[in-house]
Length: 176
Image (tube, rainbow, N blue to C red; front, side, top):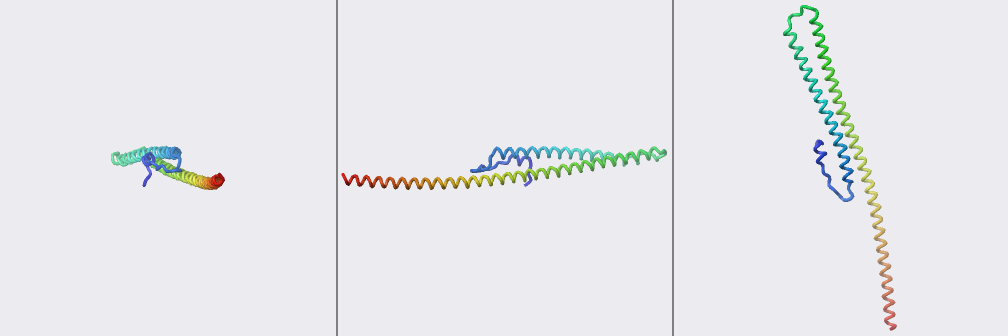
């Protein structure tokens, strides 16, 4: 499943006993959402730049293609200079377009790397939280077992005392 901004915004986690802190999870998802929104905005901006530069390049190519057919035969040395300028202009457009595509790919790669880092960090934090929770569960289980033992010992002691008291009462009744 592709993760989109809507996927992050609409994700609902099940609440379970001893689960994650819901506010902390939502805060982290907000950070991821903000980062993805920024990356998507940058990507869209670069796509617009690439499209604009592509249109300019196509327009320049069309103008270049139309000029030699419409222009009269070169009678002066000025025409070759103009053709050279047009060629340089087209080459510069191609160079700008190439740089824009390179920048776009670099930004997308950086975004992917950053997203992977965020996910890895989240997984590490989740693992640490899981280990901590497991440790707390173990500690609480041990404390509960100790309390149950104390309760059992107290009950046995109380029962013994009551039996002794009852026996003493029986002896007193026999004497009376």
